[in-house]
Image (cartoon, rainbow, N blue to C red; front, side, top):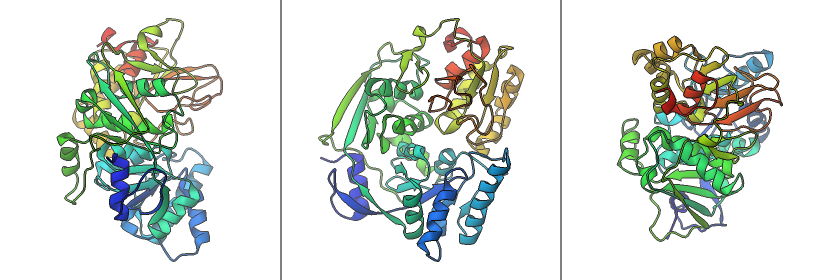
Length: 419
C-alpha cells in the first residue's frame, strides 16, 4: 500500500514510514553549484566539523555562472573551488562543466533508491530514475554535507495518470505543462508526485527527466516517473552499482489522483508570468505575439532528445532575422555529441548561437538576457516576471520543437508548420 516516496524512505531508515512522519534519513549524495552553494559553505563552516561526511558523495558543479560573466561570479566560483579542494570533494571546473541535473545521472553518480539533496530546487529531476531528489536550503545543505543525514517529513503523494493518444509533436514537456495547468503552482505543495500511465511509459528517458524536473513548479518535494525496462537500461549503461528500483503498490494510498486525457492533446505553452498559465499552442498562434529570442537548453530540456528534436525542426530552415536563437547543451558530453552527429552544423547553418554547457539563459544572469518588452519562447522551467531579464519582458515556456519552430517564423509556431 506504499507509494514510491514511502518505499524509498522506508528502505533508507530500515523501517516503515507513513506520511507525516519525521525521520532521520541517511543521504547518499549532495551537490551544489556556484550560485547557491557558497551560503551553504558558510553554514558548513559554522558547524565546525573537520570535513564532509564522504568526499565521493559531495559534488561541486559550477553551472549557473560559468564562465564567469562578472567579478561577483568569479568570486562565487572560487569560493566553491576552494571548498572542493579543501575537502577533496568531486569537482567539475570550467572546461569540464555541465548542467548539474544533466551531469549527475549521466555520469551514474546516483542510482535508483538513493536519497539525493542539493542546493537547487530542481533536484527533483532525479526522480526520473527513481531517486528521491529534493532541493534544500543552505543550513540543511550544510548539515547534510557534514553528517550525511537529515531529517525529512514523509510527504503525501499525488499521482498523475496520462492516458490516450497525443499527437506526434507532443513531448514530456507538454505533458508536464498540462499537469501543472490542471492543478496550479500549489497543486502538489509539500507532496511527492508520481507520473504514470501508458503515455508516460512510451516516453524516452530524456523526456521523463523533463517531467520530473518541473515537479517543483507545482510545489512538489520530489517527483517519480514509473520505472520500467527503459529505466533499468538507462541506469545500467552508467553504473555497475547495485540498486533498488521502487514501483508503487497497486493499492498505494494517494492524497490525490489525476487522470490527464491526452487524446487530441496539442503542444502546450505556459504564458507569462506563471508556469500554470497554460494554453494549447493553437490558442496562441497570434501573429501579434512576436518572438525576440528563443532558448533551447537548461536542466529541463538540454538533453539528447531535445537537441535532436531541435535539429530536426531547424534542418533546412533559417532563424528569422529578428530572432536570437540560443542553444545550450546540458553537458560537455552532449556538446561533443552535437559535433559528432552534425547537430552543431545544423544549428549554425540555421543561424543559432551555440554556447557552452550549463544553465545558459534560464535565469537571465549568464547569457541571453531579455531587454524591456522583449518576448522569449523558452524550453526552461520558469517564466515569472523578470526571470530572464527586464521586468517588462515576457517568457513563454514550450517544448524544444515549438521553440525551434518559433525561432524560424518569429512567432509562436507549431513544429509541423516548418519541419
